[in-house]
Length: 168
Image (tube, rainbow, N blue to C red; front, side, top):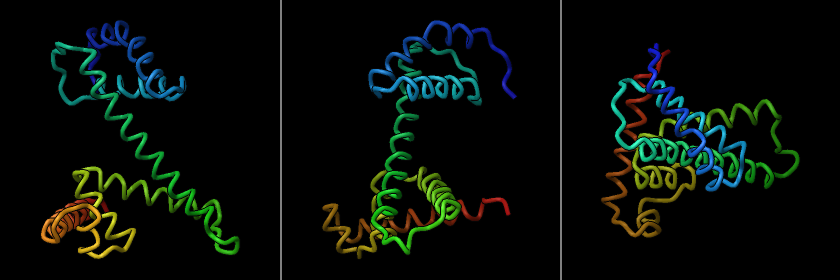
């Protein structure tokens, strides 16, 4: 439960307009900017600990950048899935219900992989989704096979830990 803090109200009143305009310029879309600005303040509101914010604009823009990155990653994932669906021959097209289940599963996988570094995530996805061999991944990313193996172990361990911690 979040305790009401007047400084949060003041933070919102003084910086929401600025943050909204910043996001609107970066995104070129007023609705997405409004959503991300609101989500940014929700993150601040639901933070585990309330700390004194010395540089509110830097603090808010850092949170907003993270949310924007998540949004772009989600959009790219959704678009890649939709592009793959369009490429399917007509008889193989799946129902809207199946499409929703697949999209929800992809989002869950994305959340699982969110805790990995970008290189580890890329290596994992190249192996699992593209079916590339470790040497092919190493060549494509310019890293050694040993590095590919280390990142795959890290990714698999991360996924197993999350699966073990998942409620049944």
